[in-house]
Length: 311
Image (tube, rainbow, N blue to C red; front, side):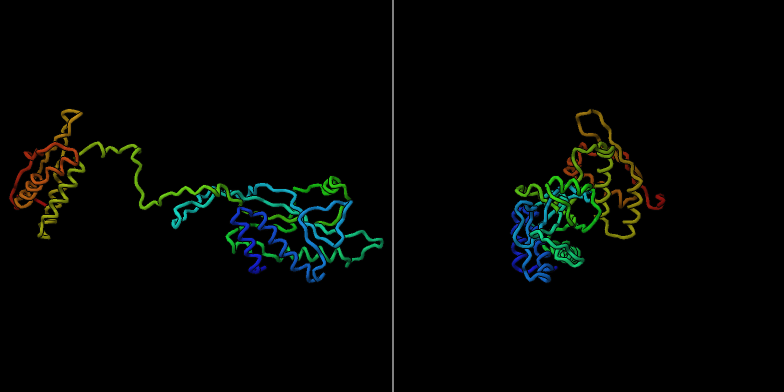
């Protein structure tokens, strides 16, 4: 069933006002009217209640009675709400409401009996065709209202139709039961914006790893990066990389409230030794930012000839 423009506008207004059930009722009415007009040329009315038996409608009438609304637990899920980057907000929370309808046909009583193709049978046949072919799921999904419908499905909600009609003070009659589940939005007036996540970051409250408490590792990383940046010869870079990897960098904590003293020791060729000394002496501010004392102790560095250093 494709919505005409007028119906679509009405349904859109209902949804904007948070009246999803009203939007559903309008769609059901349009689906029934289309099929009923084919057999009665518009002579059958449609109403959304149960008439009083003492005051039956003058004209033939199809009654669509919403007798129960409950949460559809089968469709409950724990998925996160979608985030709309354009507006900076999350979609409203939703509850899947199952709307249970009972469709009956009413007319003025007649003295003669009814045959297999009587008016009530023709009308209920048209109602059945209307609901089975209405494609409510498709028509309302076009308006961003996803739903799930069940027509003539077994229902435990009306386990005793006899008791149901008795409670209404009327004799049993042919009825058709169908259910439609629609999402009901919660907190529509909550417009608090949430900034988007640009990049993931570790929570500062998370426990630190052991590396965060030892300054030797970040010091050595910074030292190696700066030394390799200053070397231009490709062959020298490869040799220096191995030598720098073998450097021993340790921290001496003499006072728990003071930064540690860094000791650098190892064997370096003449070229690498000179660059390492230069980097350590020219980057005192960098070492202070890392959290170590200046000057750095390099008494353990030893310069060796290239022939004596085995890479």
